[in-house]
Length: 492
Image (cartoon, rainbow, N blue to C red):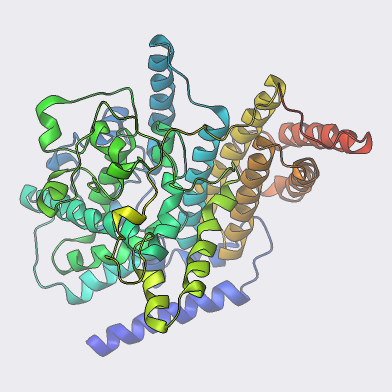
């Protein structure tokens, strides 16, 4: 049976590789035959496990705070688990709006447009990655459980539900800790810490590779926790972590002893020396208390957010990848293969002869600093916000249809979305090449809509209206280029 299972896995992989490389995939929608193949049970291992169903708003809102009962959120099969995280976007945006209302009432600075849109761009980067990977991380967990699990826990039992909840949070603690204490993993996770602000939008700022960097830490759970319970609690755990990224909630009293709260997580996001490598918990803070990584917020000390060496950029693509070069450069600077390996697998502050995460005397104690900011005129900020909303609608169209598309088609549209977000980032930082890339981006979408308009069924926005919008935008920037106004205007 084990040999048959291995043969089946090899056949699955070879089939997916052949379909990716050689399938005819030039249209905007796959053919019925391709769609039937993709939806067949033979290929289901490599498709996203969770189902796209409507979730009652009360249940969706409750899931943001882990206020869900085992009886209402236990599922027999992975295919029955709703996409709680993807369906939570309306709540994300609603809470971001509410946070800014509270800040306005308290007469505190609101979320900056440039930093906020950069955080949301990273969120769309991650979601595009999920569409491309099609649940590959979950597939390995499901495969291990189906063939190697050693304990059969009843899926409908509340005991199983709580075991899964605690197990996911325990594994997340070690995923998160490893992401800070292993340099190559930090190169991906640093995206989440790259904002100099601390607000709810930062909770959505993630690396496109974050899931792949941490999934291996969850695989031991496949020995006893059913896949449906794992997928459910993995989503609940991430949803809970969204709302703790705020400065508007000061303290939750006795709950601070058990739960991870905004007060604890503010410390985690600080680049001040006393904040470094602390408070890794996801839902619970008890793991930090048990393993010696807990740090209480010192109210008399200002927390400086962002990276120790922050990058002056709003370009999401650059922020996603730049730190990998830091890892490479550090490795190249070391002598001997052991030190070179240490530069990759030990902490970002590690030096030869020093502790794994580095010595405190070698770390930078960040003091008060001026945040990177680019002041743009109001009309340009409005333009950028409208186009960002249009890109978000485009992603929504892709998310609704990607299961009926071939891999190359999904890759093409996801790449366009990522490229669009990158150009928006260039506009936000007044990059000298932004105007040219914006003309290319808008023109490309006009041509794309002309080619694919007939294949779109029930689009969110009429293709003709979108074409007019992008033709107008492309013409505006092209005219600026022709008249020599290539520089992005900045307000004084």
